[in-house]
Length: 247
Image (cartoon, rainbow, N blue to C red; front, side):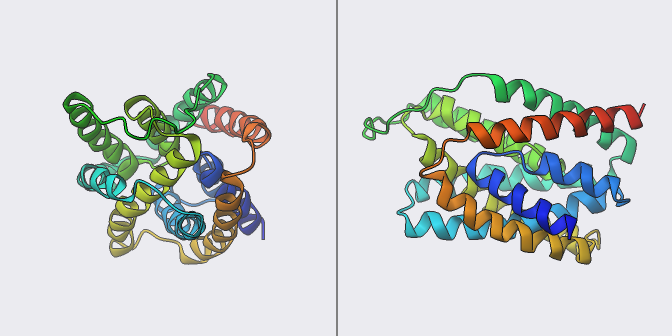
């Protein structure tokens, strides 16, 4: 029941903003799952959550679908590289890495972000930005294939910097679609290798699916400040606990 409720909260957070896995992964590890199994089980839930979020985005009029599919290609290539390292990474190294990532994300969360109003839709991408997008999303794919936690924040930052014409809702739509495409393929590797704990994954997926639907509806209307404040406190506590227990 706890995993199910956490899934609803994390699924909502992931679609409205990002970083729900920073709450889910440490909890799964604290419940006794090996890090690779926790990582794999969480990915199944993220897929369900993203599909629900994409459904809502679609009926609301999703934009930039073609560009999202193009950017998913280097992310897919990178994710297969990252999965290889994720499977072979020792538990203690993964836990320390996750704790450090969580603290870095807290710093990112308190940094101000200015979103565009979407009026400059005719702005074209330069050749330099196109190359940078390919390289950046290849790198993000590697990271996502290896850890996945907080990758949404990195996608948001990359899209905001390299495609400044996008508004907040458009960035969330693109982030969700790209992650869904590359994650569906890399998750298959974890499933094929037998790393998914299905009771945990199904309970979490049901919660995340509900959260994804809620998050999709909230993205277009709800300011993210209150959700971020709650998530900030939770991530800080879990990050400190994770780092202390692995020293």
